Image (spheres, rainbow, N blue to C red):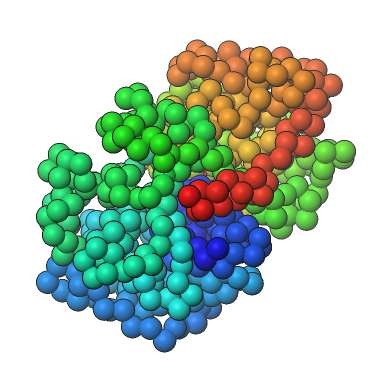
Length: 477
Ligand code: ADP
């Protein structure tokens, strides 16, 4: 098949979260299976210093309200069958951040991703290899299915591609004033309650839910959850109306990157039959995070965006209680200021027990995954979650709330005693998390049980082949 993926972030060129990992790995897997694959993504400023894209002989001319914008297209071919198309529109993307800087989101994100979506449609229409499928991800590319549908009917585009939307997180919808819709120079036909309109504003994600030919989300359980008012973020009605084209497909893990042997980010290698290296990495991380190297203490860790979704509030509450006992905790994350400050303050109050880094550091994220005994993901909701799957492979027992992709990927003793590889809890409360962490500590006291859980986790298989086959089925329709 000929497939064009469109994404606002793409590993290894840009990343703020799991979206970048997922699209990077999906593209790799599809290309390796013999499909012709293109990925279109913005050319952000930091990409220039680390990669050498080549300029394509292509001048775009996009009408944006009364203005015209002329993006360039730059490309890279990281592997056979795979071309990355970078949209170089300096006024919008030649910035250090993807969605904003340290203090706030960029004020013009609506216009930025409208222009990006227009560029995606130009590529889809005029690439010589004629994509059969355009697969868009999240709100940033949410206008693409609408724009394709409009071009198909207004200018005649007989072989227009099939459009697929993947929802990575329904909590981010791209809602902007109506003036942003006006910039698209579309007729009013799509701006109504059954279309792109959302309480008088334009909602990019809703537009894609309405106009895409098929919709996927990143785990089977989240696919069910988003049809309910509790998780539907005010779009559950429109999602229910498209239920027959909605599928939940659990993300895969790129095991070429997330590996415990010959991993450039780890000081030593280890594996399921030789865990000595894991203990060394634990000792090294304790030093790196300014903690006393104590092999005997259970080390809990977490990595992630510091956002309400991630359950940082209940983690802080649980840690208040747990840190009274013999445990250590490390965290890496950036995001909401008050959560950053709370974690920094926790580390200051418990200098021998807590290490906290407020930054985005891929190397350290691998070391925390590898070094810890237990990995905390107490998310309020979690569409898929990747860190718990990385933890499993790294022999680090995940403690997760029973929601979304966390429930689909981690096996609790109560789910299946023979295959147990993690600890799950139900209610969104510090109390429930404390209970789960106490179970972890009881487990830690019994090395043969730790070994059993680790082996089950390290041998669980979330490789991309299964995920890719599921996407191929959706592409075929
Ligand atoms: P989400 O997409 O909601 O942020 P996921 O668990 O799906 O959550 O994916 C998060 C990805 O981002 C993982 O690869 C994780 O390691 C990475 N990540 C999150 N925060 C950081 C950070 N501060 N430093 C390095 N990597 C991070």
